[in-house]
Image (cartoon, rainbow, N blue to C red; front, side, top):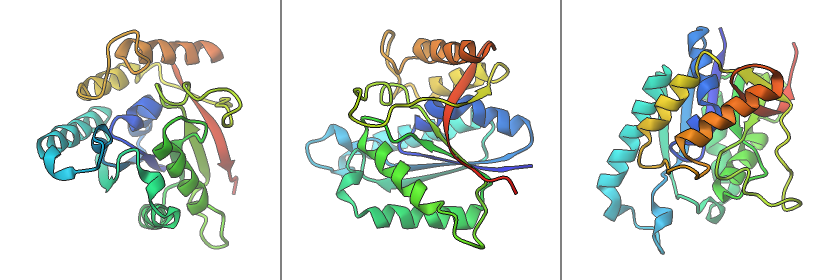
Length: 230
């Protein structure tokens, strides 16, 4: 049995990036923790003001819990970092939160964002995770670090602006694709209509394309950050 930690920026990123894989881990008896660091609402305002969005926060946070329930994830934690403004924070403050999560949960596997992404929160979280999982002697909980693609963010990064997402690790989600799509439906507030990249149809096509990359019906693609074989 593995302990799996998914660290995502905003509610829905965890499902977009690895929802099928999360459901597969649950079905295989692994313990999955879903952590969302940014609040996901206030970037729509010129100036951050949480007070005017109380009802929206309730809707979004309930959607996050429902979406993770559909995948079978029993452990979900939501933080309150500013949405699309995480570059305004000291990077060390983000690292400290991630380090504390790792020390508390002691995961064997971590899934998080790829660095080559237009969303600043995704990039800051990637950097924080890479820092937090540095292999200090005597602190080897994490054997595996994998970076996922986030539809409507990763593929929008222009060539040469950042390292490209070039998957070298695939997980078959033939048996859990429907759970992923149903989980995304719980995020109705965040999803868009086809042909937007963050639509249910687009995510289904992406899963089938990633599956076709490796000769199966559906898959999720990742880049391997580190693998420690003990």
